[in-house]
Length: 314
Image (cartoon, rainbow, N blue to C red; front, side, top):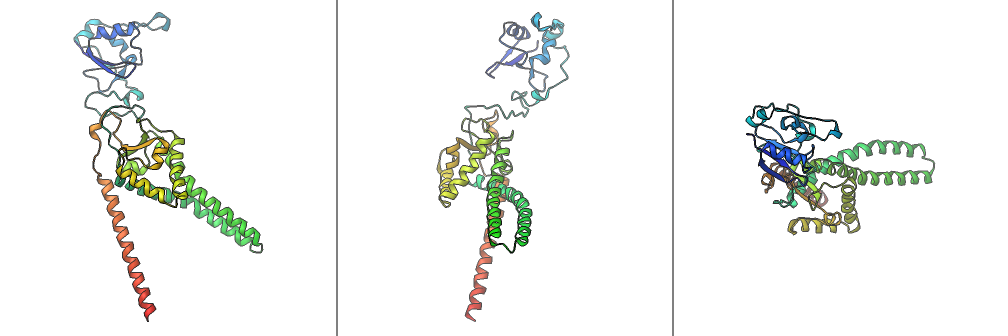
């Protein structure tokens, strides 16, 4: 006899029960055709509609569906398994035991949560800065060329030149702010819930309860961070870095304003044990490269100052 498991409307798992119990719950309205069920031999949890024939569900006549099957085949386990697995089911959070399945819209509360610390977030920020920098300059270079041609063509008018330069700087700052804001808004509100940098280090941005954030929340999160940095002349960035390092949820000022946290990609899922508690390989590599570049820059500055001082003495 096959033993079945099912998920109720609150996504709580129940079982094992026999096929008769599933049929009875369906007929009493406790389960509908969208309810997820699983038995030994299935690769994934499936909606009840996919196994309705196997379970011989008798749907109300008003639906126009009458599903029957051989009870004996059901009971002895020889009934054929459904061969079709819908795309929605393939990404169900109720995957068969031992399989890996993540539903980005499903939040599992109450589990252990690993918050991304300062070094992990710094590595992600370094990657994202490269990405947004390339995109921004890809837009700024053509703009600079166009504005340069315009200034040359208006060489005889000083007021026109000043106006062109003001327009250029307005567009420059708009691109530098809006490009990363749109980038973070789009990436962090996607199913990945993470920018390319955070994907690389295995982190994601969510609400404090684990829910996916909206585009505008992610957009304004970056605006809040940039705005605080400008208004405080960078002091807010230092304060946020300290807060990320010492606070319980590792939230920066912009996180607290927007009700967000940065956590491991497996946080708020059914596999919290897969969370990375250390820095991770990508973070270590990025930090190492950053350290080498910083050391090289310091050496070059020292050499330049030495050459300059030597030339001045001569």
